[in-house]
Length: 161
Image (cartoon, rainbow, N blue to C red; front, side, top):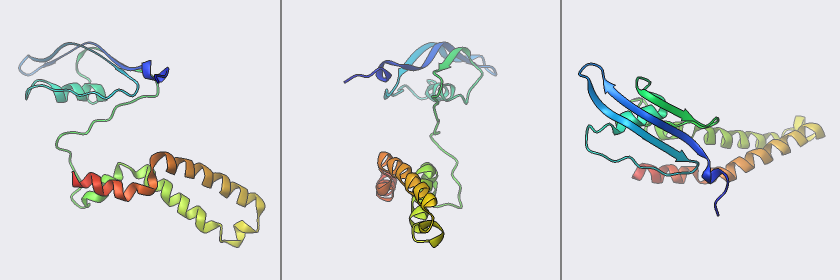
């Protein structure tokens, strides 16, 4: 069932063109795009056709272009380059975990709260216990919504691709 958000345009590109100044080569010409909330998009084209440049403009990394790019308030786009620069001191799993650090932090806080339930300074103080229960419930909602209990399994599967 379609919702109001499904019909909400969250990004528009109007008449965008991009010319490389050094050689005056035009790589994008008069591009018009709009994305609806929840849309899945793909950009295809020949090597050198401007796909990466287009994505950099959409993500706000490329600012030298003609035309207009507009985001609805509260929305943004990230950009993952084809050849990302990875920290050579980290394992693949550690690098992948950086992308889900907020989920890792939520799980850590949830476990810390569970440990506090066994501490006299908390279980002897009803007000502190109420605050712990309330925060635990908030974290549980986040964990459920992000399927955080299965994070390790999902990371392992992602690294197999």
